[in-house]
Length: 123
Image 1 (cartoon, rainbow, N blue to C red):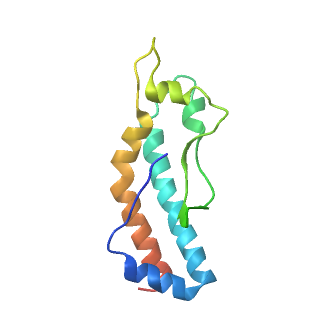
Image 2 (cartoon, one colour):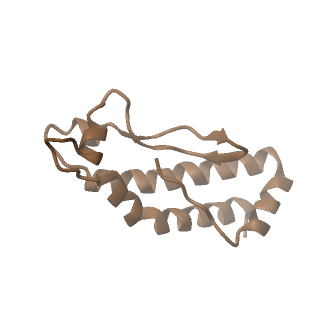
């Protein structure tokens, strides 16, 4: 999965903390929408044979990990062969569709987070 870090948003995050529960909901919504941006980009990069791999790309619910909120974007565990496509095998060349999708969308995802946080706070 991909990790993103936003810089220069300390004041915005402090305002969210002050809002408590409402701030948490705003933050969760921003993360989910940014996850959708990444999901769409990964789906555009996904090779299509049967379409099952492309359809399996999902955005997880918001999770807390090491004190930070996050969403995970990627194929369901049912589509076990996704790792073979992404990283390759001895007999198959790698096709890093996840990495390409993430790289294409990371700036847009960060802008989405910033936009949704500001909208939620009325800024």
